[in-house]
Image (tube, rainbow, N blue to C red):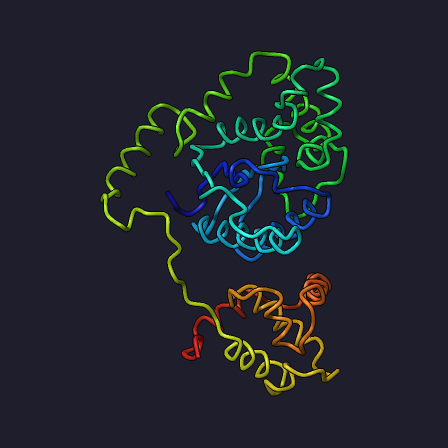
Length: 326
Protein backbone atom coordinates (compact mmCIF):
# COMPACT_ATOMS: atom_id res chain seq x y z
CA UNK A 1 0.00 0.00 0.00
CA UNK A 2 1.96 2.98 -1.28
CA UNK A 3 0.65 6.51 -1.63
CA UNK A 4 1.94 10.04 -1.09
CA UNK A 5 2.56 11.01 2.56
CA UNK A 6 1.76 7.51 3.85
CA UNK A 7 2.95 6.62 7.34
CA UNK A 8 4.52 3.22 8.08
CA UNK A 9 5.85 1.19 10.96
CA UNK A 10 8.70 -0.74 9.31
CA UNK A 11 10.37 -3.79 10.84
CA UNK A 12 13.12 -5.98 9.40
CA UNK A 13 14.70 -8.99 11.12
CA UNK A 14 17.77 -11.13 10.69
CA UNK A 15 17.35 -14.35 8.75
CA UNK A 16 16.31 -17.03 11.25
CA UNK A 17 16.37 -14.24 13.87
CA UNK A 18 20.15 -14.16 13.67
CA UNK A 19 22.06 -11.16 15.02
CA UNK A 20 22.55 -8.44 12.39
CA UNK A 21 24.26 -5.81 14.57
CA UNK A 22 27.31 -7.33 16.25
CA UNK A 23 29.31 -4.19 16.97
CA UNK A 24 28.92 -0.43 17.27
CA UNK A 25 30.62 -0.16 13.88
CA UNK A 26 27.77 -2.20 12.40
CA UNK A 27 25.21 0.12 13.96
CA UNK A 28 27.04 3.24 12.82
CA UNK A 29 27.29 1.87 9.31
CA UNK A 30 23.55 1.15 9.21
CA UNK A 31 22.71 4.65 10.48
CA UNK A 32 25.01 6.22 7.89
CA UNK A 33 23.28 4.26 5.13
CA UNK A 34 19.88 5.13 6.61
CA UNK A 35 20.73 8.83 6.58
CA UNK A 36 21.94 8.68 2.97
CA UNK A 37 18.80 6.91 1.80
CA UNK A 38 16.46 9.24 3.70
CA UNK A 39 18.02 12.11 1.77
CA UNK A 40 18.12 10.32 -1.58
CA UNK A 41 14.48 9.19 -1.48
CA UNK A 42 12.98 12.14 0.39
CA UNK A 43 11.70 9.94 3.23
CA UNK A 44 10.94 11.49 6.63
CA UNK A 45 12.00 9.51 9.71
CA UNK A 46 9.93 9.96 12.89
CA UNK A 47 11.48 7.30 15.12
CA UNK A 48 13.96 4.41 15.03
CA UNK A 49 15.57 1.76 17.19
CA UNK A 50 18.22 -0.88 16.53
CA UNK A 51 18.05 -4.15 18.44
CA UNK A 52 20.50 -7.04 18.15
CA UNK A 53 18.60 -8.98 15.49
CA UNK A 54 16.14 -6.44 14.05
CA UNK A 55 15.31 -2.78 13.65
CA UNK A 56 12.21 -0.58 13.69
CA UNK A 57 11.57 2.61 11.71
CA UNK A 58 8.56 4.92 11.71
CA UNK A 59 8.60 6.80 8.42
CA UNK A 60 6.52 9.02 6.17
CA UNK A 61 6.90 8.81 2.36
CA UNK A 62 5.96 12.08 0.57
CA UNK A 63 6.87 10.42 -2.76
CA UNK A 64 5.05 7.08 -2.24
CA UNK A 65 8.34 5.18 -2.61
CA UNK A 66 8.70 2.97 0.47
CA UNK A 67 9.62 -0.17 -1.49
CA UNK A 68 12.45 1.55 -3.36
CA UNK A 69 13.75 3.16 -0.15
CA UNK A 70 13.71 -0.10 1.81
CA UNK A 71 15.15 -2.20 -1.00
CA UNK A 72 18.15 0.13 -1.24
CA UNK A 73 18.60 0.37 2.55
CA UNK A 74 18.36 -3.37 3.22
CA UNK A 75 20.45 -4.42 0.23
CA UNK A 76 23.23 -1.92 1.01
CA UNK A 77 23.47 -3.05 4.64
CA UNK A 78 23.34 -6.72 3.63
CA UNK A 79 26.24 -6.20 1.22
CA UNK A 80 28.24 -4.54 3.99
CA UNK A 81 27.35 -7.28 6.51
CA UNK A 82 28.37 -10.15 4.26
CA UNK A 83 31.68 -8.47 3.45
CA UNK A 84 32.43 -7.34 7.01
CA UNK A 85 31.57 -10.60 8.77
CA UNK A 86 32.41 -13.07 6.01
CA UNK A 87 28.98 -14.67 6.11
CA UNK A 88 27.47 -15.52 2.71
CA UNK A 89 23.78 -16.05 2.17
CA UNK A 90 20.72 -14.17 3.32
CA UNK A 91 21.23 -11.56 6.02
CA UNK A 92 17.61 -10.49 6.51
CA UNK A 93 14.69 -12.86 6.90
CA UNK A 94 12.51 -12.17 3.88
CA UNK A 95 10.66 -9.00 3.08
CA UNK A 96 10.40 -6.21 5.66
CA UNK A 97 7.05 -5.67 7.43
CA UNK A 98 5.41 -2.29 6.85
CA UNK A 99 1.85 -1.83 8.16
CA UNK A 100 0.48 1.55 7.14
CA UNK A 101 -0.46 3.91 10.02
CA UNK A 102 -3.87 5.57 9.84
CA UNK A 103 -3.12 9.08 11.15
CA UNK A 104 -1.11 11.17 13.62
CA UNK A 105 -3.01 9.75 16.61
CA UNK A 106 -1.76 6.26 15.82
CA UNK A 107 1.64 7.70 14.86
CA UNK A 108 2.12 8.62 18.54
CA UNK A 109 1.31 5.07 19.63
CA UNK A 110 3.69 3.59 17.05
CA UNK A 111 6.48 5.93 18.12
CA UNK A 112 6.12 4.97 21.78
CA UNK A 113 5.99 1.28 20.85
CA UNK A 114 9.28 1.63 18.95
CA UNK A 115 10.97 3.57 21.73
CA UNK A 116 9.98 0.99 24.36
CA UNK A 117 11.58 -1.90 22.45
CA UNK A 118 14.93 -1.92 24.33
CA UNK A 119 13.18 -2.71 27.63
CA UNK A 120 10.93 -5.42 26.20
CA UNK A 121 13.64 -8.07 26.35
CA UNK A 122 13.45 -10.93 28.84
CA UNK A 123 16.30 -9.54 30.94
CA UNK A 124 14.97 -5.97 31.11
CA UNK A 125 11.42 -7.03 31.97
CA UNK A 126 12.76 -8.73 35.14
CA UNK A 127 14.17 -5.41 36.39
CA UNK A 128 12.44 -2.62 38.29
CA UNK A 129 10.69 0.20 36.45
CA UNK A 130 13.33 2.64 37.71
CA UNK A 131 16.09 0.48 36.22
CA UNK A 132 14.17 0.16 32.94
CA UNK A 133 13.77 3.93 32.69
CA UNK A 134 17.49 4.45 33.27
CA UNK A 135 18.37 1.82 30.66
CA UNK A 136 15.93 3.28 28.14
CA UNK A 137 17.26 6.81 28.49
CA UNK A 138 20.83 5.62 28.16
CA UNK A 139 20.22 3.36 25.16
CA UNK A 140 22.30 4.93 22.40
CA UNK A 141 20.79 3.11 19.42
CA UNK A 142 17.39 4.73 19.44
CA UNK A 143 15.83 8.10 18.66
CA UNK A 144 14.45 8.26 22.21
CA UNK A 145 17.47 10.01 23.80
CA UNK A 146 17.10 12.79 21.19
CA UNK A 147 13.37 13.05 21.92
CA UNK A 148 13.95 13.69 25.62
CA UNK A 149 17.02 15.92 25.20
CA UNK A 150 19.76 13.53 26.31
CA UNK A 151 21.50 14.17 22.98
CA UNK A 152 21.01 16.80 20.29
CA UNK A 153 18.31 16.23 17.69
CA UNK A 154 19.94 15.20 14.36
CA UNK A 155 18.78 17.10 11.29
CA UNK A 156 17.68 13.82 9.61
CA UNK A 157 15.15 13.01 12.36
CA UNK A 158 11.71 14.62 12.03
CA UNK A 159 10.39 16.58 15.06
CA UNK A 160 6.71 16.42 14.11
CA UNK A 161 5.73 14.05 16.93
CA UNK A 162 7.34 16.27 19.55
CA UNK A 163 5.59 19.35 18.17
CA UNK A 164 2.26 17.90 19.30
CA UNK A 165 3.37 17.72 22.94
CA UNK A 166 4.03 21.33 23.84
CA UNK A 167 4.45 24.96 22.84
CA UNK A 168 8.22 24.79 23.18
CA UNK A 169 10.81 22.04 22.85
CA UNK A 170 11.51 21.77 26.58
CA UNK A 171 7.86 21.30 27.47
CA UNK A 172 7.33 18.84 24.61
CA UNK A 173 10.28 16.72 25.70
CA UNK A 174 9.06 16.60 29.30
CA UNK A 175 5.57 15.53 28.26
CA UNK A 176 6.79 12.94 25.77
CA UNK A 177 9.09 11.44 28.40
CA UNK A 178 6.08 11.06 30.72
CA UNK A 179 4.08 9.47 27.90
CA UNK A 180 6.75 6.84 27.26
CA UNK A 181 7.27 6.13 30.96
CA UNK A 182 3.53 5.59 31.30
CA UNK A 183 3.99 2.66 28.93
CA UNK A 184 6.13 1.05 31.65
CA UNK A 185 4.00 2.02 34.63
CA UNK A 186 0.63 1.13 33.11
CA UNK A 187 -0.73 -1.81 31.18
CA UNK A 188 0.79 -1.42 27.72
CA UNK A 189 -1.05 -4.42 26.27
CA UNK A 190 -3.53 -2.34 24.19
CA UNK A 191 -0.70 -0.69 22.25
CA UNK A 192 1.13 -3.97 21.80
CA UNK A 193 -2.05 -5.63 20.57
CA UNK A 194 -2.66 -2.72 18.19
CA UNK A 195 0.79 -3.09 16.66
CA UNK A 196 0.34 -6.83 16.19
CA UNK A 197 -3.36 -6.99 15.26
CA UNK A 198 -2.92 -6.72 11.51
CA UNK A 199 0.07 -7.20 9.22
CA UNK A 200 -1.00 -4.40 6.88
CA UNK A 201 -2.54 -1.59 8.92
CA UNK A 202 -2.36 0.19 12.30
CA UNK A 203 -5.45 2.18 13.21
CA UNK A 204 -9.15 2.02 13.90
CA UNK A 205 -11.18 -1.08 13.10
CA UNK A 206 -12.69 0.70 10.10
CA UNK A 207 -9.28 1.69 8.72
CA UNK A 208 -7.94 -1.85 9.12
CA UNK A 209 -11.00 -3.26 7.37
CA UNK A 210 -10.74 -0.75 4.50
CA UNK A 211 -7.06 -1.58 4.04
CA UNK A 212 -7.78 -5.30 3.95
CA UNK A 213 -10.52 -4.69 1.37
CA UNK A 214 -8.24 -2.59 -0.82
CA UNK A 215 -5.54 -5.28 -0.73
CA UNK A 216 -8.05 -8.02 -1.54
CA UNK A 217 -9.12 -6.11 -4.65
CA UNK A 218 -5.51 -5.92 -5.84
CA UNK A 219 -4.71 -9.57 -5.22
CA UNK A 220 -4.92 -11.79 -8.27
CA UNK A 221 -3.53 -15.07 -6.99
CA UNK A 222 -1.05 -14.95 -9.86
CA UNK A 223 2.72 -14.39 -10.11
CA UNK A 224 2.41 -10.62 -9.81
CA UNK A 225 1.47 -11.02 -6.14
CA UNK A 226 4.84 -12.57 -5.34
CA UNK A 227 7.49 -10.57 -3.54
CA UNK A 228 9.93 -10.10 -6.41
CA UNK A 229 12.43 -7.42 -7.36
CA UNK A 230 11.31 -5.83 -10.58
CA UNK A 231 13.99 -4.27 -12.82
CA UNK A 232 14.04 -0.48 -12.69
CA UNK A 233 15.81 1.93 -15.04
CA UNK A 234 19.05 3.37 -13.73
CA UNK A 235 21.30 6.12 -15.00
CA UNK A 236 24.49 4.74 -16.54
CA UNK A 237 27.96 6.02 -15.64
CA UNK A 238 28.27 7.34 -19.20
CA UNK A 239 25.09 9.43 -18.89
CA UNK A 240 26.20 10.80 -15.52
CA UNK A 241 29.66 11.64 -16.87
CA UNK A 242 28.21 13.56 -19.82
CA UNK A 243 25.84 15.54 -17.60
CA UNK A 244 28.48 16.51 -15.03
CA UNK A 245 31.14 17.23 -17.68
CA UNK A 246 28.71 19.55 -19.49
CA UNK A 247 27.90 21.46 -16.31
CA UNK A 248 31.52 21.89 -15.21
CA UNK A 249 33.13 22.47 -18.62
CA UNK A 250 35.15 19.26 -18.51
CA UNK A 251 35.36 16.03 -20.48
CA UNK A 252 34.10 12.67 -19.25
CA UNK A 253 37.70 11.48 -19.26
CA UNK A 254 38.58 14.23 -16.75
CA UNK A 255 36.08 12.77 -14.29
CA UNK A 256 37.42 9.25 -14.61
CA UNK A 257 41.04 10.26 -14.13
CA UNK A 258 43.03 11.85 -11.34
CA UNK A 259 43.10 15.40 -12.69
CA UNK A 260 43.16 17.69 -9.64
CA UNK A 261 41.07 20.44 -11.25
CA UNK A 262 38.18 18.00 -11.68
CA UNK A 263 38.02 17.18 -7.95
CA UNK A 264 34.73 18.88 -7.08
CA UNK A 265 33.04 17.78 -10.31
CA UNK A 266 34.23 14.20 -9.76
CA UNK A 267 32.77 14.18 -6.25
CA UNK A 268 29.45 15.53 -7.56
CA UNK A 269 29.46 12.75 -10.16
CA UNK A 270 30.09 10.16 -7.41
CA UNK A 271 27.15 11.49 -5.41
CA UNK A 272 24.86 11.53 -8.43
CA UNK A 273 25.92 7.97 -9.27
CA UNK A 274 25.18 6.85 -5.70
CA UNK A 275 21.70 8.34 -5.99
CA UNK A 276 20.76 7.20 -9.48
CA UNK A 277 22.96 4.43 -10.87
CA UNK A 278 22.05 1.53 -8.59
CA UNK A 279 25.77 0.66 -8.42
CA UNK A 280 27.73 -0.10 -5.24
CA UNK A 281 30.17 2.43 -3.79
CA UNK A 282 32.97 0.06 -4.75
CA UNK A 283 31.91 0.11 -8.41
CA UNK A 284 31.53 3.88 -8.30
CA UNK A 285 35.02 4.26 -6.86
CA UNK A 286 36.52 2.01 -9.51
CA UNK A 287 34.90 4.10 -12.24
CA UNK A 288 35.98 7.46 -10.86
CA UNK A 289 39.73 7.16 -10.56
CA UNK A 290 39.91 3.62 -9.12
CA UNK A 291 39.47 4.77 -5.51
CA UNK A 292 38.11 2.71 -2.60
CA UNK A 293 34.49 2.63 -1.46
CA UNK A 294 35.63 4.29 1.77
CA UNK A 295 37.10 7.17 -0.24
CA UNK A 296 33.79 7.56 -2.08
CA UNK A 297 31.89 7.62 1.22
CA UNK A 298 34.22 10.27 2.67
CA UNK A 299 33.95 12.41 -0.46
CA UNK A 300 30.14 12.23 -0.31
CA UNK A 301 30.20 13.20 3.36
CA UNK A 302 32.30 16.30 2.61
CA UNK A 303 29.99 17.21 -0.27
CA UNK A 304 26.95 17.29 2.02
CA UNK A 305 28.28 20.56 3.41
CA UNK A 306 27.92 22.13 -0.05
CA UNK A 307 24.49 23.73 -0.23
CA UNK A 308 25.03 25.14 -3.73
CA UNK A 309 24.20 21.88 -5.54
CA UNK A 310 20.56 21.51 -6.56
CA UNK A 311 20.28 17.72 -6.49
CA UNK A 312 16.61 17.62 -7.40
CA UNK A 313 17.16 19.68 -10.54
CA UNK A 314 20.21 17.64 -11.48
CA UNK A 315 18.44 14.31 -11.07
CA UNK A 316 15.47 15.55 -13.10
CA UNK A 317 17.81 16.69 -15.87
CA UNK A 318 19.50 13.31 -15.87
CA UNK A 319 16.16 11.47 -15.88
CA UNK A 320 15.07 13.50 -18.90
CA UNK A 321 18.13 12.54 -20.92
CA UNK A 322 17.40 10.29 -23.87
CA UNK A 323 20.75 8.58 -23.30
CA UNK A 324 20.18 7.68 -19.65
CA UNK A 325 20.70 3.95 -20.21
CA UNK A 326 23.44 4.15 -22.83
